[in-house]
Length: 296
Length: 268
Image (cartoon, rainbow over all chains, first blue to last red; front, side, top):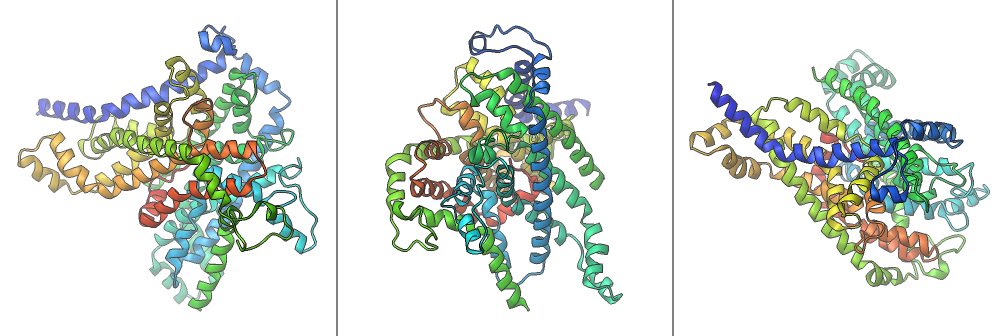
């Protein structure tokens, strides 16, 4: 019996071998190299020759001391929080709207997925043109109601809002789909009972829907948080983090340090990236714990 | 009442999809009308110049993206399907830890992976190559694929596998002849997402293939925006063409898409 159990284990791990090798070579090793980058003093030459001197936490201290650190942190927080609040609220409102079937509802719900499925470069370049100061349709529409043209992407006051709006647009479908499936899981009998007891619509939402949807909401928000922290493409394509750093988040800052300049500073770039990963992992652990509490 | 809801739903969808409509509209707009105020709301007096530019300049980029997408699908399925079978049906010791690691792996920001890959690829000499980019892009899909396939394969009836065993099929045979064919829907879902993410990838392309001879369509569009800010009909035409896989995915695999979103709840 024990021998057969053993051979079963061998077979199981033989099937798992590719993914284990894959995770070690293509996840663990690049991550290890990234940590190493952040702890050494790399230049282009030493990057190629691989003899960069060990620098300890110098790169991290350099990042903390950088005058760009405070604004980047603030922008990351604002971008993430504002995106999450609006994505979730709009997504929930739409999910509530779509949960009672009506003619065409399935088709329309599918169409709502389009922004989420489009390549980010497509969405970002489309928004770039929509928000163009002189020829953008948004400013044309504002002009009709008598509001002056806004320099969405070229003014430091507006750039962060512009990329946030684009990011909300991309994130709404995800929230809609997940919250919709959460709403469907609430049994209709609960609502029927409440209706018999004379609960009005408002009461039904706040006393039934909202509490019963809490686990799904928590997961939606946490996943949204982890994914919003990662957002890089949209901001980089629309504003490159500018003008003058006004829409720079940790993700774009890390990219600019590592790849955006003629003289790359891989060390600090990797250090910023690792700070981001710590934040993502902390929230990731919260997510996993929430998940386990939901499915005991 | 239901009619009213349909009307409201149509209006909401129209607002949501307006940017997509505008992309299509601009792709047909003539250069001289591009900066017109107010803009043309419909592509009347349109032009196909933008699409001609796509045919002239973007075909190599589109071809490269196609190769990268297909390569990513193959690599992802080859790595993920056996692993999912083991996790779902063979009860490996430590399988829980592995699933946990896969869950966490999805949370790592792409830009960090990109920097690590840059260092690794530079030493390995695969920077600016298509195979390198396929490997990097597959990291977007492999954890998702394993988790979704595991969830699906767990639902396959145990009696079926037992029957195969009684008939003398080994573990490999059971996997190949029974589990894989039965998992077709899940495999389709996973492949579609793997393709779409590889096709859409910008982070890895712009870091690991900046100087490559064969660059994907995302970089094609990016260079376009950078170099000639004036030809927005060509840029938007390229964007429309680059959106085709997403549209195809939505049309042929609508139910899988929604299932995929909720099952793995993943996307960068």
